Length: 265
Image (cartoon, rainbow, N blue to C red; front, side, top):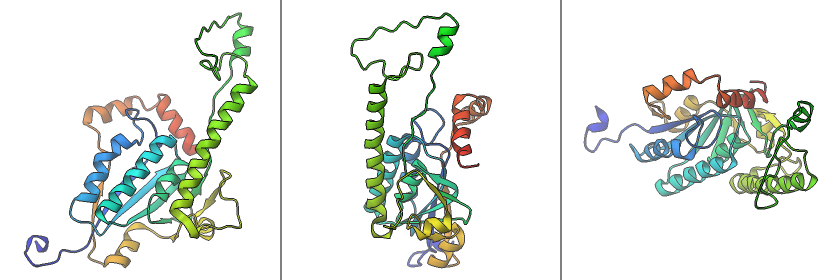
């Protein structure tokens, strides 16, 4: 009732946004800028929050979607002059750490996995299998690079070199983002950009996060015991949630499991 009375200052509000899962293109059930846009807009705009807390549990994914989401968080934070604090759960790696770095501060559990500041591209080669089966692969293109890295044809050195160049450029973008956001907090004695991962206490020593801490007690210590928490997360219509359960064993679900499995989760 207090919050509706005139001239009575309401208790501080912390908006909590959950960012859980792999980061990918819109419409595939993963975290994307499109799916998060309305959630983030509400979190920053409703109720004049004292801070926005990000609950992050992500093994990474699309570098483009990671960048778009991170940029949206920064735009909203600056527009509304609201501090952003990230809290890592099991993992904030690769694109997950990109999202965490968009916050002003990052905290994690002692056993949280943080880092993996690198870029990966994975595929397969099936040309030997096709040959053994007597199957001929026929590809016709306009443009010599159009069939680059075709998994059903032998790998070409020039294709690999071109891919590595692209991955290197994306890696440079990732490094620039982390350096811009973490600035002087980063250790200069350790190479942080090899794709290595660390647990929270070591990550704090390296400047990748600001310390070990959990959302509710840390926010209450900062804003008071009467701090209110309002949660925001992606909510799908019932028929979509049912469909997602039915398709749980599909490629998208398997890819997300594989991404988490890389970190022992």
